[in-house]
Image (cartoon, rainbow, N blue to C red):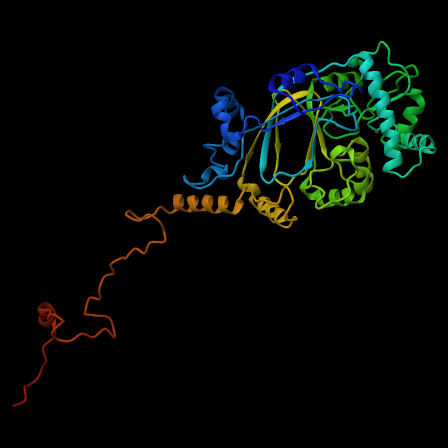
Length: 460
């Protein structure tokens, strides 16, 4: 995309769309300015970011006592740990293709991500109507290309799929009905801001029949909703679970959804193997560059080619019993991602996020494990290079700890130097086996005087 900085930020605030199809354009400006020039180009912003970092003992990139990356001595090549800036457009609704996402991947070290700014972009009725029609065509194309259904049977297949997953598919509101007079605020997102739980669904037909279908694949419905046919509605099967652990009603859930800037899915390290098995099995159902189906998979996570939609997360839970921590990041929130935890992000609004990597003592072992995984990747893989050099960081940190606990003797620069220590000599002459001639050995008169005299007569 040929675009200058001014045009990019105008689209950041107002949104951009394709001139012919009205499809939203999602652009991302990554690592700008470069982390090496962050403090030079944006000194005030850099100082504010460092000051705002939580747990500075771990995250402070200069003086953090528990950040092992700080322990590298001067003159040693240091890894690029940030801060790094990510500026991207966003959309509350999950489009299915071309979403503003950071696909599933795994960082080599610990990381903290702070949402610094958000901007909500609104869409008019005409654009919403055209987006709905395009999504319907994309749905038919997916059935034909990914699931092998002919165009003549696409409609029947779509009905069968809708009856099974009507409450979780990301394309719920893509119908042929007119959306005249519908405001963008009346279209809730298909991802809830709940920490862990089922996602809200977009209902297009009779609500009672939709709720019946929801109960088959999710959990019981806690509330009864009555709305007219063809209206866009949100039904949360288990309510919204806030950070304190309390459930909220659906009305509160819709308010919560409007405040978030980014939707995060973070998986446990222990679930990495099951997650990889699922992605290998369903790899043909995903699309990557130019919306082409994924064909070659070197490593399901390190390839960074998959993004799990609501439907895929539902399938993952059914087949392997694995589900991520799902939550919304609001303005000013800091998200900590431990090393080795697969995660993905979708921007709900236009966002400016600043990320910083650090190395905690607790996760050194996991960093070493990830380094081994990266080295086993193909030679032309994007994650092949060891950019962290965790072993060098760990050795220098250990060396500094040893020097602190056992300081070096004065006059020595390092422990490799051999320091000669004068040992006391034996009181009565040399050690055994260490014989010297009479000329070289001085006579100790004091020893001669202390020798006992012989008793008895002397022989004549």
